[in-house]
Image (cartoon, rainbow over all chains, first blue to last red; front, side, top):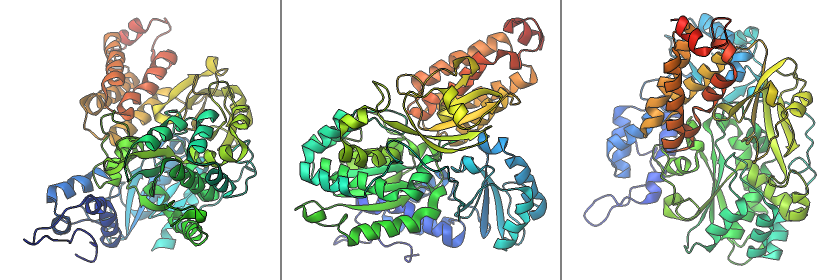
Length: 157
Length: 408
């Protein structure tokens, strides 16, 4: 676990972890790295992060469950997020979503059985000028047409 | 990678010609108090939408007594329909960073953060590269440009998909490693901010405007825009129009002019300020974009005659239901009730009395919610209910009470 944690290890003479403001501030970056490497944050990982930072595991859990890009359940290798803001819907994002559902053979919110793809809807991704837009992992793709869907999936499988 | 949507960027302030880092040199020459005075004189107000005078904010942080002070750039633009900061960070990053360094010098801060929304993570490598270049050229680091004791550096932190973290105190909570739940104000971040220290927190666009003001002077800046709203505003325009994109316009521009600019036809309504903003119908297209009239963080969404306004109200309320942090009751409990109300209206199951109750609940939410999210969440609902009666009224007699009641 310690490969994720680079802070919060200072201990006083009794072996108690010294908690400083800076170590707590590293919580989110630590969790973001974990999410990226493993695809989710397990109970065990939350426990060990809490131990490293000297905070209660419930604190870690509360942070993980607050942010929509962090998850306690395993996500696919690639996460496809489709913006459902009004500009995207008006430009046809629901058709794009259906096309992804058909080709991947899953419903929105699910992960393919081979663990490759998770399909999600998300709030505005800041691409309304190029709507409909999708976000594959960190990559933003604008002006998506139903025909492009197959290509996008192929590029990532 | 993103395919660039170029609209031949032209503008009077941010998109005007500029030699990077000349303003920083000038600020270091004229000194701290003169720099703040120039910003205060310019009447620059926060471009995120709240419109707090930037010079006043900087002054509060500058006079606060503390060894540690912070500069935070709010790049968590999550308002539906806004993408101007994406363009600024992609095409004008040095302008944003220069603004942050000037702010740091003016208030005496040593550390800065750029809080970048998770959705824009793909810009991280190019932004880090820019910071590295700035460090090599001593625009960041120790004794910046040989100014003794002026040390400053910028760290980029990522958000993780939370709209409410765009609220300044929620953003600070998130930076400190907590859930993004807004704090009570006062105290304001300029006095008690990151880890309890004085913190200047401004929008990306505000920082990008600063170097231009320092360089060309407050008088020049005040000559653009209206009397109470100096300068220009970046608008992110999307929806039913031929030329969506980011436009720099002087304050005071009317909705009508904007619609002409983007080739929008058969326009029924315009949502100004995103989901938390206001819905403006055709009869009000003569109104202006400015702090004194229609205030916006930049989001403009155009709807044509084919759109059902209740779809739009439902979409916004679904969004707020998802993004409400849940700590205060009016917002957490109020939004689902309004959403249910919109769905009842669509089915023709809402009575006149209940609609009045919903409008009164909206007033309560505006008054009693803790942060801007809850306070502004009923705005679009109320506007749409009041302006587009004919969309949900079910018979030809124009009395809502009768119609909705009859529909039951």
